[in-house]
Image 1: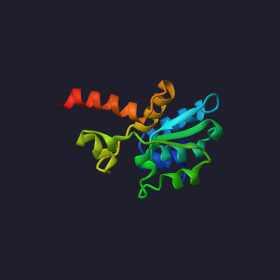
Image 2: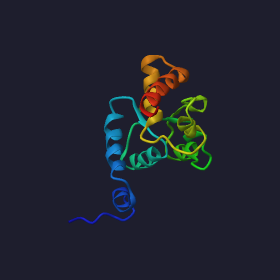
Image 3: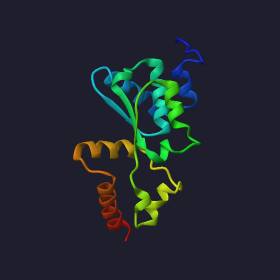
Image 4: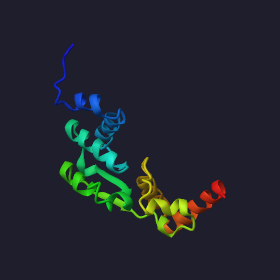
Amino acid sequence: MKRINSDHPYSIVAKVGDPMIPFVAGMLSSASGVSKVMLAGGTQMSAVLAFASKIGFNEENTAIGTTSYITNDQSANFKELVQKIADIPIISVDPGLKNSRYSGLRAFSEGFAKEGVGAGGTIISSMLKTGNDSTKFLEMVEVEYGRLFT
């Protein structure tokens, strides 16, 4: 059995990483060769991007989509981190949750929670597909939030 160098990306991620990282990086590596790809997520996608930079991907076909909660979070240094890894666009959306009538939704914009799981990329994709803006997005979210929690 061939031993993998401890500095090798696979060895590093095997010891301290999330199994999602090489999986998504592999998808990015393959898909960006033939299509446009948006990594949907914030700081975790920077880890994917770093891993993908070691195995190869097409920067011209790659972007990261996230929310303004990530791009405006100075403690995350998200923009600087991505720029150190690759020259790709960062697409950021403000979901407008600060304008919600529900305190549970406003909490996101107040820094009490991170949306996670690619919400920014999902919102961006939805806006591109439907032509809706942040105001319409908030209206639809509040309908569902009200249906579930009131």
